[in-house]
Image (cartoon, rainbow, N blue to C red; front, side, top):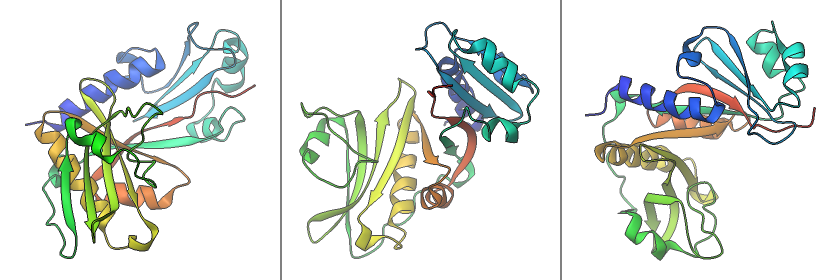
Length: 232
């Protein structure tokens, strides 16, 4: 059984790798500046978890970024000219991770990696399922709802690494407001956890509907970050 501590440790390793910092840095309780000479020019990314803020910058902007942002509060960091988009990331609240009953009037199907290709060509599910021009996809498991043989809502999880899966959801406009999004996300999350993998869910700070789905599906926020590149 996956524990809350397992989720946090796995996610911390993942975001430490993304920010080119150590896991210990994520527990610093202060603002930590990271110079990353592997990043492209004019790169800056801010990530916040608990009471720690990590700021990773490419070498060319590291001195100016540190001069401008050192000593700033978290609110000041995210209101600065260095931010042009922000994402909230959620992880499952294990106290809520029980399957929800499927609602009547729809049919539901769970498909794994070997069956995903049969969905190639469907439209309107860019947040949960997308294929490249060769028909390949990072989505490795999906749960969808059908009405009259038409897929009208789909939750999919894409492969991040061996331990992590990122969950997305799309519901056709006509069928929104019927709790299909939270139902599909919750039950897909339970299935992923059953397989020994750890899902997370991401939503833009401007997408209130997506944030509401996360909460109704039994997720809780863990970290936030910015998009990553801006000319300074």
